[in-house]
Each structure stands twice: as structure tokens, then as C-alpha cells.
Amino acid sequence: LYEVLQLRSIGTGFSKPFPAYQPEPPVTFDDEDEEEYDLEEEEAFGLDDFDDEDEDIEAPSFLSTFGDDDDDEFPAPQPIPTSAPAFDLSSKDLTKLRTMLAQVKQAGDSSKQLQVLKAIGALQVENGMQNEALATYGEMLSVYETVDDKKGLIETLDVTASLMVKTENLQAAIMHASRGARLAHEIGDDDAQMRFLITLGDAHQQLGES
Image (cartoon, rainbow, N blue to C red):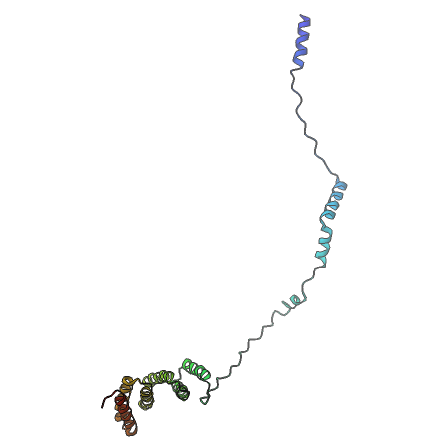
């Protein structure tokens, strides 16, 4: 019996589990080790140079001028002087005259607008640009009607009707000449009325009418 008990105790001794894995104890640093570690880290990442560079950086000199005189005010901007466009109706440059026309239109000056249109129309007739001149005189008629200037209307209708006969716009010439003759009769301008009657005769003759 004693031997049996001894064998049982031996057998149970092998059934004990192996001891669990023990973690390694944490590494501790004393003060001297921590200082050495910090120095090594700074050297590895170049932190010493970075700190030195920060000390050398200075603010730009122009920034030092701001904030010194808080009471000073910036001077008010001065307007740029502009010169008035030259009003030269004797120019033979149609581009300049059209630019001048756009300027007086923008200014809303009907009187100058008519003057420029007359200069453009006369230059177009002089250069043989009769169709372009008809468009210019048509614009003049609109302006004269707006300002209710009958004398200006008669003069413009006279030129327009004559140009229409030359360009063989005969029906339109008859219409404008007839209107001009009526207006000339209303204001008692016999000379203008006679010119319109002559233009009417030329237009009817070209149409084969007696």
C-alpha cells in the first residue's frame, strides 16, 4: 500500500502545469540615462541645428515700419487727369470721326452728333461711298426728327433724295423728295421746294414716267 501511494504521488507530480510565461521587467532609466537618450535623439534628428536657425531668423525690415505710427493716415488717392477728346470735324479719317460720333452719342449731345454725322456723310460722298452715305443721312434724319428741326430735315432730305436718284433708289427718292417739298412749302422755303421738284422730275423720268 505504501508503494502504491508513492507511485500515485509521483504520477500526480507530472500533471502539474508548466509555469506561465513571465513578461520581462520594464526597462527603467535613471536621470543620467534619460539625458544621454535626449542628446542622442536631438543629434539624430538635427534638433540642435533647428533651434539655432530659429534663433537667427529675424523679421523683415519693412515690417518694422508698420505699427510705429498708428496715428498716421495714408494719403487719399489723387484722380488721374483726363483730357477731353479733340473735336476736329475737318479730319479726313473716318475711323476718328466714328470714334468722335460714339463719344458725343454717349454724352447725349444731339447738336454735336449732327455735326459729326454731317462730316461723316460729306466725306463718304466725297470718297464715292454713296450707300454708306445714305445710311449716315438716314441717321441724321432720325436725330432731326427727335429735336424737331424742320430746316435740318429739309436739308438732309434734299441730299438724301439726290443720292437715291444717283443710286437708282427711285421710289425711295420720290418719297423723300415729296416729303421735302411739303416741308419746304410749310416754312416758305421756295428754293428748297424747287430743288425737290427737280429731283422728283429726275426720278419720274428714270422710271419712264412723264
